[in-house]
View 1 (tube, rainbow, N blue to C red):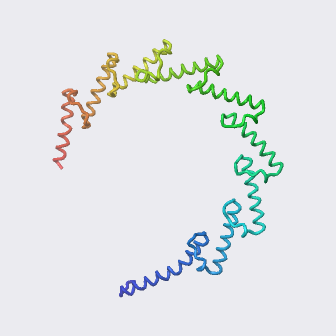
View 2 (tube, rainbow, N blue to C red; view 1 turned 180 degrees about the vertical axis):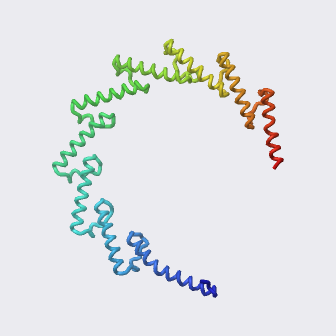
Amino acid sequence: MSCKLPWLCIVGLLLLCSVARAQTTPDRNFFECLQLFGSCDHAKLSAKQAAQVAAAEHEHNFQSCKNGWSCDPSKLTSAEAKAVATAAQDRNVTDCMAGNLSCDKSKLTAQQLTAAAVTAKNRNFAHCKDGWDCDSANLTPEQVSEVQAAAHRRLLDACTAGWDCDFDELSEAERREVAEAARERNLTSCLSGWGARDHSTCDYSKLTASQSAAVAQAEYELNLGDCKFGWESCEPLKLKAHDAAEVARYRRQANFETCLAGGTICDATKLTPAQAKQVLTIPKASSNSSSGR
């Protein structure tokens, strides 16, 4: 339906919007009050809405008290006050069992005190065994032995992994075990092929004859790959004749394919006459195609 008087239509729309705002504003205020927003205007609530908001505020205060948060205990009913006291006692027991500083032992029963003490001793023992800060004076002789054994295992693991450790604390058998682990690490590092480039990662003097041969082959394969792909780390003088020839063939083919693709690193001087002729036809074909359009 069209409007023959546009100005009248505009006035009508403004009136409708004004009415809509008048209807939705109280609802929005009621919602904000229920959510306990600071923008709530209690004066604009109806009696029914005010009662609902008061109930929401009371429940929020009760839950805050129950959780140990900031609240107004004077607004609680007797049943709610008991529930809050029970929740506080439960939290205190949990804190004491966990060894938290917020624990108030004066509020624990005799049974709870005993349980908390046992838990604290077990926790202290676990900390000592794991090498954390603890009170070793509170350990039993058996626990002291376990803690010492655990500390020695950590020492052996550190030495075996090649970390800083005190070798003087190891037995002869353990020293042999650590030495064998060191030889295995060295061999693995050498076999990676990087020993020739970073001698700090490979000690050739600790390799057997067969290991030295395997390492030399690994380094040769690494250098062959570097040369094949044209990397700066390539040492062509270390290649065998047949491998050098294969690398040269591979590099020429790679250069040819680069030239065909129009690559900027194409070296035209390394192309054969046939390859050069084939490469030169590419731009012409592209140019003819463009002129045809």
